[in-house]
Image 1 (cartoon, one colour):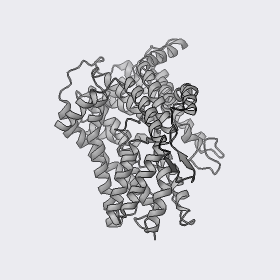
Image 2 (tube, one colour; image 1 turned 90 degrees about the horizontal axis):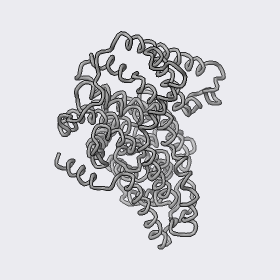
Image 3 (cartoon, one colour; image 1 turned 180 degrees about the vertical axis):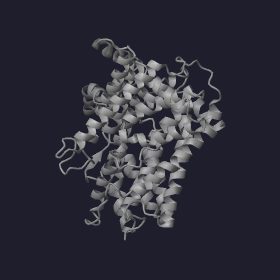
Image 4 (tube, helix red, strand yellow; image 1 turned 30 degrees about the vertical axis):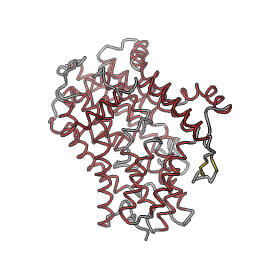
Length: 495
């Protein structure tokens, strides 16, 4: 507890998040100039291209800073995802749908199961991709507040599940297809007949859902909640029992959701569906690529249905009014994103992220470890690199061409190495400052604690990150030592 309190105190002494990202952007500019002055270069392991560290204190760098500033902001992927999702979620929240749904489903549920349910649903929520970062944490905070527990504990549980448990799921998702494709390409340099499929980590990731749900719930109840203590703040909304009109509205919203899903499933499974890929599959497909708009339309559908029933929506202009109110709540987030987008863009443009990843990988290779220790070493290295490269696919695109061939020569199955990578990358998702969704969660956090800063959030997330990494790595070792397949026909070593 003293260690976490120290992390919080040190972290909260940092500048306001907006100024912090401004200072980080300045730091990236200066470091790029310093490193580039030594003529540092790096060979991209995927393309073989020789990349120089580019200085932002140069003619080219100055031109980039000035000409990219607006596009860095407007094309920053989380910005569109968050604002679009909040149009739907905000509408549902403003008309009272979310509040009623929580009252109906949680108030009468056994309190002992609430934490496990939040973690479990949060982990499975990665099916919605990045949209889960926007949906799950604030709902989890509301759930905890509703049942008389500290809302920040709920927020922490929701964010940890979505972020640190990002790779785990019972269902094959887009992440499986994306990473396995990169792994297959990397494996071709050693054996062109080796193919890593989207289901090669399926068994392992399915078991991981259960293990991480238990670990996450125990962390929340044994570490996070005792540290937070009793919530002393004021909950703006006091939840009463569901009224007959609210119950009717919730039923109507549920019916509209079922109709929406039925239409979606029908369109998805008709012959030659436009939502499927050219081969008739779902992974990848326009359906998965369009999951955010689909969720947006779902929330709008149920929100409008609920609002009409309770008579909060009486004319078409009311829909836009409630959406506008939701957008007002996002103004602070938009300001923060402007600064964060610049820092991340500068860091990537300078090639410093690639340089750090490649040199770290070469360091691990030079140690020449074998067996389980080298897998642990690779996992720890990846965790460290993931702190400076948030995009999981981008980091794997850098690591896979180096480590997949190296481990295949030692007879390791590339799908096993991919699983180790996914553990490390997911576990540190929630503590890296380069995760743009940390800004969003911090904004949600300030709803319950105006004095909360980046240190407050990281001190809450650190136990989840460390324990998830340790528990998940042990689970992988157990699979390896007992010869349990990670997926159909996939073990630690090549056959």
